[in-house]
Image (cartoon, rainbow over all chains, first blue to last red):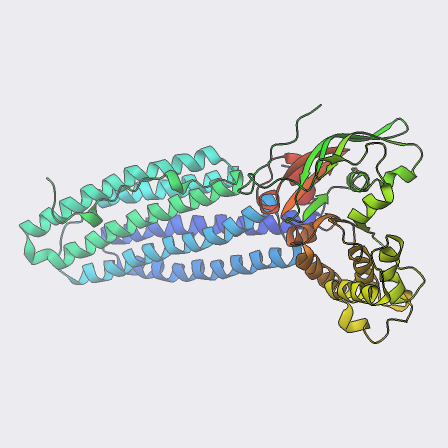
Length: 235
Length: 266
C-alpha cells in the first residue's frame, strides 16, 4: 500500500503497530514464564509473571492514547480506520492473554502450598500450541497476511481438542483420587486459561483479517470447546 | 459504453431514481472531461460527489441542470433523465429546468437586493405568486425551511449582502427552495464557511434531505461522510466507485478510492 502524503500519519500508525507487537511479545513471554514457574513450582518466577502483567496493562493504556490521538488528529477512514479500530481491540485481547498467564502464576502459588500432585502433561503441550498461536498471529500482523491470520484462526480447533482431552483426563483423575480434587481443580482452571489464550489469539486473527480485507471471519467459525455442554467424561 | 461500477451495500436495492445519468460524456473542445458516467440519484438520499480537483465532479454536477450550456466549447453526450425525461432533449425549457433543479454555489452569491427580494425573485419570474400575500407566504416558508427566518424576520428589507457568509449561503438555499425545486445541486457550499456556519448548513442539508434530492460536491471527506447516504468517487473524468457512504469510507472496493480518501500518494 502507498504511503500517506503526510508522513507523520504513517509514523503515528507505525507507533500503534509497534505497541501492539510489543504487547504480543510480552504476552507470549508471560505464558512461557508462567508455565516454567508452574512446572518448577517456582514462586519467585510466578511473582515475576504477576509483575510483568503490570507492564502489559500500562502498554494497553499507551496504545489506547495513541489510537485516540490518531482519531483526533487524522479522522482515519477506510484501511486506516479499520487498522486503528482493530489495533485498539487487539490490545484489549492481548491484555487479556496476560491476565490468563497471570492467573496461571496465581494458581502456582496455591499449588506450591498444597499436596504435590503431578502436573497433567497435556498442559505443557497446550501451552506450546497457544504460544505458537500468539507468535504466528503476531507474524501475520507484521506481514499483513490475511492467509496467515486464517491459519491461526483454524489452528484454534487443535487447541480446543487438546483442552477437551485434558478436561476429561483431569476429571478422570479427580474421580480416581478425590483427595486431590483441590489441586486438580487448579490444573483444570489452568487448562482453561491456556485454552482462553488460544481464543484470544483467534480473536486477534479475526481483527487482522478484518483490518486487511474489510470482511468478518468469525461468522464461519465453529466452536470446539464441548466441555461446557458436557457433564461426564465420554471415555 | 462502460457499465456503471457495481453498486454496493445494504441499500443496493432501492426505489426509482429521481435523476439518472446514462452514458454521459462531456467534452471541452477536444478535452474529454467526463467519461461514460452512469449514475442514479435518489430523492431521499443525499449524494456526495468526491474526487481531486479537475476530476470532473463539478462538471458532472453542472450537467444536471445544464449549467454547462453557458460554455460554448462544452459538448455533452448521453442522457440525463429527470423523472424519465431527458433534460438534453431539444425543446426543454432550461429556465424551467433550473427551477426544478436548483443550484447553490461555493461562494454565497446573494443578489444586491433586500433579503425579501432575494427569495421572492424566483417565484416572481416563474409566476408562482398571484398576490403579495402569496409571495409573503413563500418568502417566509422558504426562509423557515432554510433555517434563517428567526435571524432575519425583523430585517427583511436589509440587503442580503450584509448578512454573514453562513447566513448568505442559507439565503441562497432559501432562494433555491422558493421555486419548489425537486433537486438541489450544491457545489462545495461550505468551503468558504467557518465550522459553525458549516455545521448549520450541514444540519440544514440533513433537514431538507427528505424533501429534495440533494447532490453535493465536496472536498471535505468528513463532510461527505457526515451528510450523505451515497458517495461517488470521480478520478480523471471517470466514476471509479459509487456506493453507500458507510461502505465507501470503511471498505472501499477500489484502490484509487482508498488512496484518495486516506490521503495516500496514488
